[in-house]
Image 1 (cartoon, rainbow, N blue to C red):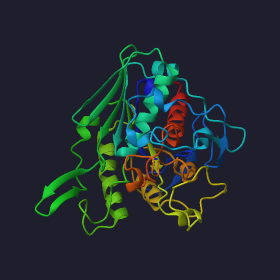
Image 2 (image 1 turned 135 degrees about the vertical axis):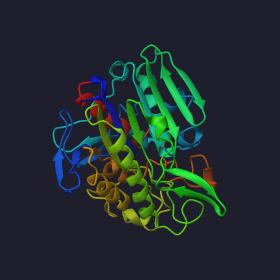
Image 3 (image 1 turned 45 degrees about the horizontal axis):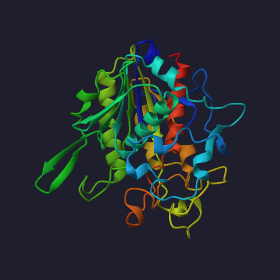
Length: 352
């Protein structure tokens, strides 16, 4: 049952592909399924499309500086023109903002996570506002919760900053992650569409979680989230999606260009059929954790398509400029727009 039929969507975004994978429960069985109207398989390519981008960043005054690459001095523009084309006789749907608002009428959609969740939320708000330029909206931020509302439709598009999903506590030696505690979950309860993300800020050492491998910490945090879903989400009313891990491109050896300066001066997608570094270890951890769930989770995997977009990051045209090269976040317009097209396709497939 889709959100527009009265169900709640939960999408945990660690961020894509187009196949919808229903992961088996505790048996570890994996069953591949594809939603009606969606394109099967992860294969595809980025194609140049002169009709892109989907919006103009200068017409989205609420966009944060770190994502506004053109305004920050980036001169090349081809990176704006690429559209993801799934393999075979298949295309992602064109975004219809008015249909999106009508479908979500009276509903709340919330991104929960770190600045990559913010990246995707800001992309979606720009897509909607550009597609429905006459829509009246309000924008507020209170105590970490940003709310972009369309009163005429009763739709709220929200972002709640919670970089780790689990709790952070102060100790005598500094801050630490409580990997078994999820106090902020009360903020998410009752929201119709939830898009979670994590991973990027879960670090080993420093001030986050000392002496623990990053993947181990990530798995523990996800298991805590899984317990919340299994115990608090009603499968007769809620559809749960999980998205993959947003790749960074800080190490050019990952795509077999060791002499390149990370993502700096990359101007087009990789022209290869497979990402040289292979799948993300964090993505494999996410799949493993979801397989252990009793809740019937559906996996939307966008990691693969994003791995090829070495050109899509701010690099020196983000918040830190030349002092702090950013190969983790994404320029807007850009790759997160495709993530939102996949989310939109998933909602359309459930007949609103």
